[in-house]
Length: 200
Image (cartoon, rainbow, N blue to C red; front, side, top):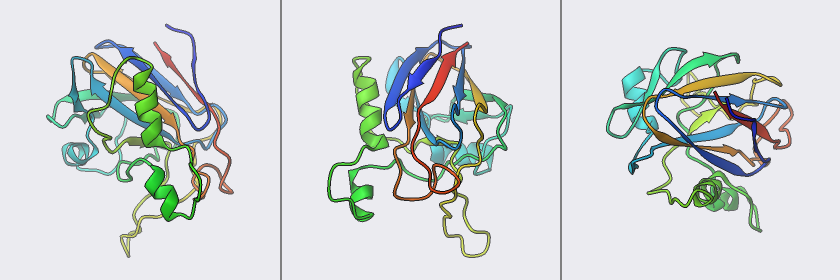
């Protein structure tokens, strides 16, 4: 078991995990979305793919015991624990500079796309692209009538966590989402906060 690793508010962090190792992601202060990616350590062009996961799971949310798959349809992580209400997102792309420009931001805004690249750079790696992340703790379900995506506050409370098991040697990347222009990080819109993870 390793020490807790801080994912700084508005920034990202990456780590290597071996096949069979578990990774616990903790919503330390509550209501914080954490964009999550996983890449095959030996071939970064193979990565956790939300469009393939939705088909493999026949669902928009994974349940405990289910595996998320890569763009080659192979299991890469399995959700083995979830102490939250199970509300996560597999639909919404990572925020980027263009998203914030469309929201009216005139200056640079921290974003999950850049956080992914920066976190991997710390390990001497580059993302082959920016896959759609598994947005852990994010509450953005489609409306059952209109099918419009609803951007709702996260319901994950302080200290709640999810645990993933690595199904291959991988690189895991987390971004403590810096979104503060849409009310998703907290009951009243919230302020982005740090989160933590631990290799078990």
